[in-house]
Image 1 (tube, rainbow, N blue to C red):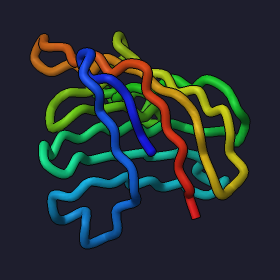
Image 2: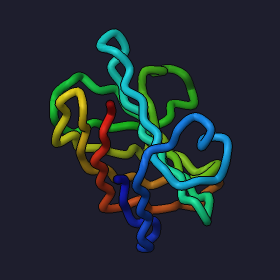
Image 3: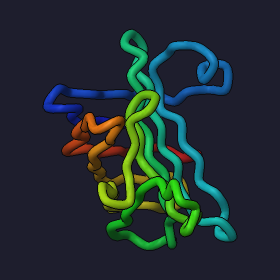
Length: 136
C-alpha cells in the first residue's frame, strides 16, 4: 500500500506491478532495493484510471530513521536521489523530500514520506504519505 495526499486530495495505491504492467496503465506499486553495496530504495506508484504517478528514491543505510532526498541537477552529489510527481514535477536541493523508515526486515518495508515537487515554478504538495510494501 502507498497512500498520501496530493494538494489535499487522497492518492491511494495497493497491489504490486509486474513487468508487463509497467508498460500499460494499471494501478500498482513497484519497488527495488539494491544490495548492501548500493543501499537504496526506489518506491513508485501509478493509479489505474488517472495515470498519476508518485515515486521517490533515496540512499538507505539499513537502519530505521529519517532520510532526505532530492534530485541533484548539478551532478555535484550524484548519490542523492529524489521524489517526483507525474512527468516533470520533482524535488530539488532547496525543496528536498523526507522519508521515515519505521520498519524493514528484509521482507517488508514501512514508513512515511512527504515532499513538494516543483515544475516551472508550480508546486505539488505531497503530504501525509505512508507505505507498507512486501519486498519479497
